[in-house]
Length: 251
Length: 194
Image (cartoon, rainbow over the protein chains, first blue to last red):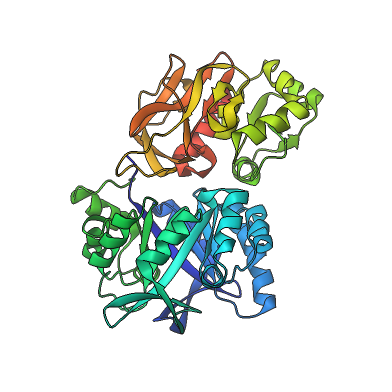
């Protein structure tokens, strides 16, 4: 049986890993390649690198960084952040990325999902959705949560799947960086609706939170940043604890 | 000398990177002379099987591969090309492994593509020296080689299938050893010792 995956996420700004609380108030936590290699050796199943550089210079640095990551890391990794055309996706593939994640650009141009998936395969395309609950309805946001769209979470995720997305990475903007746990009932609804894997992201504060989203939430993978970066839970401890709860993980 | 066959397929960099991490100097080439004189040959492959096979045939490499007497390792689509035929695009393969490649049949709860870490069992080749039964390896695929006598590792995703195959000097892995952490590294090292 396919194991549930644990995925540390590294936000990278100008080559340095940073992690914010609710996408603001960024703190530096270390070198992106070294930190990724450490997580891989500790038992991470995949890595996600998100480029949050705002400048062209920063973006150029990121491509070089992807090449370095590909040279050093022996597990799959996804890269995302600001990918808005097929050419950029192709450059990242050439640099050695196993998957790319698209977010705002997919909302703006859903055809982008179709184009990248048909050219490089569904396994290469992760569609990331940052959503917020407004009056009981989960709506997708773009630009790091600052722009609210009319897209309802489950319908949008389903459209992404039909267009060829290989996975959905859903972050609740109401939970991200809070350490209060994931909205499991929303994940369960999403997992029920989709036939592709769902990655849960944003909100993990404890082993229990991650166990919950992988069981009650029906998620296939849990992505987290702060709890790993700040050493609140280490990956080996987390996986042992999940295994104790009869969750199938790679140890 | 280690040769990685270049036939215009996607993402061969990860295989080259894995070899470099092991300190091996591999040559990426489509030159039949280099391929036939190599000590070890790796046939990578990502993407569509029919297109990959077309590239192999057009470059004349399909006949070259059959003639290799050194150990050959096909990875993912590279391995599928070495089977008899694939359902993907109705592709005729090289016919080295006596089995066919078919698509996973959708069933409730079964995610296709089969993507992620799955365990390998029934290990029976020097390729798996030092690898425990039930070890996890990384898979990404929608088509799989049907169970046959030359299976040297099996996995289960809805149905049991060949995770790895062996026929004389030809080896194949459906999973990606180059992305399978320390287990994958051991498998690649074992191959290079053959």
